[in-house]
Image 1 (spheres, one colour):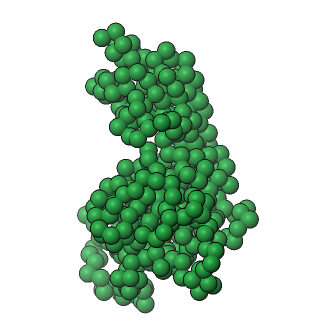
Image 2 (tube, rainbow, N blue to C red):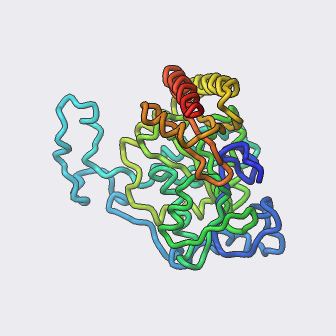
Image 3 (cartoon, rainbow, N blue to C red):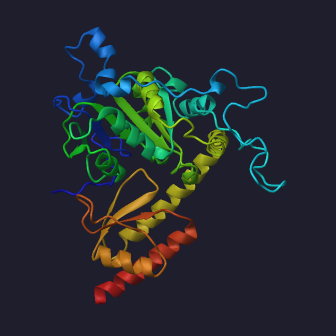
Length: 368
């Protein structure tokens, strides 16, 4: 079987995501039909497209409410918070951030900033805060999508390997079957974790959620924005689906610090683009070096901050590099990725050390 040219190519040709389809409905005629097929449905059925894919018991849920929904100012003694605040030093940078109070569960300002980030020139209707769900990393988004759509031991999810491992993990947790096939009908989830490395805001499928009710597009601030530590994942989708996700999530899933840092980063996209240019320049240098290496069989293209390449004795090379202090990722245990390694693009110094170590270890392994 032919090897895929990039670790996270999708059925949908965007080069930066992977399709995940949920639910037990009939197979579609093609992957395109998986998103667009509404032929034969009445207007009422088309409007009900989200609800018919959600578990009935989930549809009965109402979002968590607290006293702050009605009264958010004054003497606040309703949530059993510690009004004395955290035991931080008086000069601590976070001392005055109000960490003793629960965060806003709705995060409207942050959702609006995310919606406005890249899509102001889209030919589709503008994205609004009602199209945005925020999770504790994309992992929470994946988990909730499976939770709301799949009945344990009845429904299935579809994945297109090689892909992100959490799809399988979340399915296993919820006792949901996994299918590996490009033809299925249900919610279509497109993972755009690496969207910032495509070089064009028009690459995103997020604006299409205003047209296709079963489409969900996930993004993250962990990659291009360099904010893996705040664990902020994003889902764009139909407003009704976003409300259902909000009904299921933990009440205060996005903490104050994550929200504050994310808003600051979203207001400073020039720095984002500058950092991405540096990473992509470094990536090309790494690709050139790997392509010139006698130990590398192939280097695969991607819109991302990593390089996927095939080499001889990949597992032994990976282990010896790690033992010598340079840790990359062995991907040979993934479908279609035999003898493949994945190296994240780091600083110029880190990349130089990785390439030097790879050449040294590869020569050592080959001679053994």
